[in-house]
Image 1 (cartoon, rainbow, N blue to C red):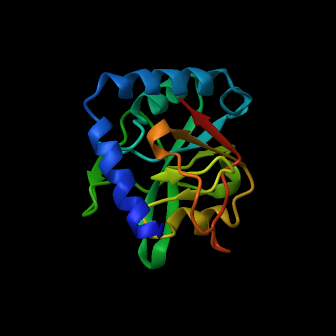
Image 2 (tube, rainbow, N blue to C red):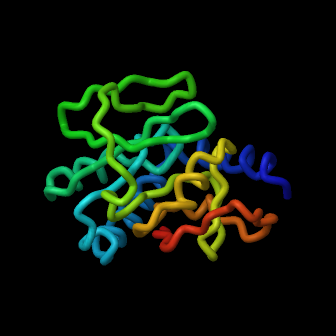
Length: 178
C-alpha cells in the first residue's frame, strides 16, 4: 500500500480511537512501560511534540518530565521542511499553527546534541522501527543528524508491517507499544 493511503487509513483508525475507553487503556499501558524504561530514567532532556487530538497524547508526559526535573523541548516548524526545538517550562506560551499544531511562542533554542531523548511522532510504524509521518519529512531530516536516543509511543492501531522503506526514512530505536 502506498504511503498516502496508509496515512489516510491511520488517521481514520486514530480518529475512531479518540473517545474510546480502549484509547486510555493503551495510553496507560504505554506510559507505564515507558516510565519504567532506561530511555526515560536516563534522559535528562527530552524533545517531544505537542500532540494533536488523534495522536498519542503527550501533555501528561511533558508534565511528568517537568515534574521530574527533566528539561523539555518542543519543535517549531521552519520553511523548507526543517524544524528546531525550543526549551519550554510550565509558563511557556503557545500558539496554534495553520496545521493545528501547538508551537512555543518564544525563542529558546535547544540544539540537537542537548537532547538526550527524542519522542518521535508518527501515523504508522512497523516492528523494525520505521515510521510514516504526515509527509513533510521534518523528522526524517532532523533524525538524519541527531545522535541521541529515539523512541515512539505507539497505539496498536498504528502497526502495519508492509510498505516500501525509502533511503531517507530513519528508524526509531525503541517503540513502546500497548
